[in-house]
Length: 424
Image (cartoon, rainbow, N blue to C red; front, side):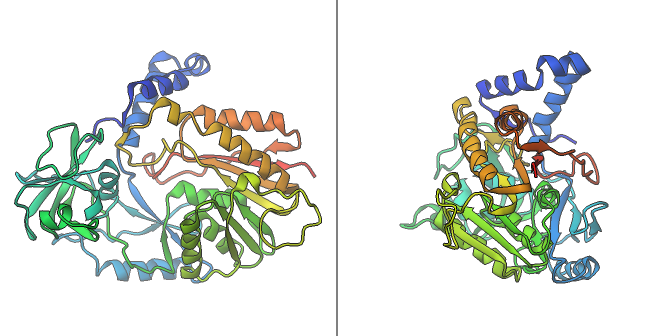
């Protein structure tokens, strides 16, 4: 059921995507009307939350059934409001370490007269079960105080001025909550306010909160991100590289699939993100992860005899390489608004190709390279793979196995995943 408008994009970006998705090959295959319908449906799906919350179970520490039972018990103590939260938890029918929790929504929630406006990113988080944290609040009533019942709206176009008392621009309703801070605590302080600003009690889409719930056994992760690890197919004892690893969800999944036996090297160019990778690995009791702050485009050493443990690495150092490349991110759900220009949307291809060059050099003969993005543009997906197969004759495209979701709306992101191998 569609309750939100299609994802807000700048007109130039919409026209660019339309030209891509209604190209001659597609129109010839399915017809103009069907191609147009599919494109419009995509834009609508992107602005809505998925039908399920995906939890990756730490099956290297406990069985799926045991984790499922513990999760049910923990969530009985978690409530979003006076209503009972659905505790239906189902295993994914094909992925052995995934649990799915149905999202309840859209629900019949009545809008209130008192309103808070939040940024689009904050609004998207609310649709996934989060409360409203103070930094995300852009506008609130002039005399808002702790305990006030508030309707929460998401600013679609990024035009609401922070500190405003009202906003009548393009916005959408995401639910009702209770103010945990008064207005002065949010806007009239020397330092940015922290903590929950509005506690959601009647969200339009209801999901249980996972704050502090089984941190070492249940890891919130988008379903396509979990699929990436299984496509890579890590085996115990191997040496594996995650080139753009932060915040470490895929890194830790790879380590878990290896039974924590072998070595998973995680690279990211931002220092504080490396700390996050270490924290996640420690939380999940994984010891085979080694994370380094390093630019992966420069990860190949010119000295094949190098003995230093960290980057850069000699050529053919890794059995498998995951290149989950920086991208325009247009496949993330829910995403009600993206204000990037067409130039920004199209700016990632050169970096992706530099990373591809390094990935191929670091991969052993006969090794596996998985390239993935969370965007929907051909230039960053199919066209990049076609370029790589032409640029690196040693690569062979492997059959792409479809992992089906519980239903057509279950994906929490639209991911492109490509499985390549290097010739032996």
